[in-house]
Image (tube, rainbow, N blue to C red; front, side, top):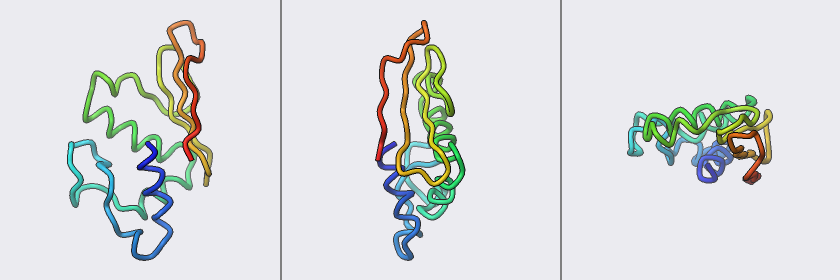
Length: 108
């Protein structure tokens, strides 16, 4: 997720905006089918949209692990990825089956 956020931040600069630096479709490789930094920057402007793309790619690449991830507010037994519109940070939160937060980190 940190690399995704860094690529999204580059999406606002002319030359770096056209670079493709993350496996945004979850097929296991970075190629022309993935979105560029500009598109990631646009995702970052909408609440949770970058997280939505990240979680979908993770779920496609690894269904067992990907099934633990969700976007938006935390839920019991899940790892959530969330952010506001135009954020400076993305929040990753994990809760156990009882709904207790066992991990929380802001990614800059």
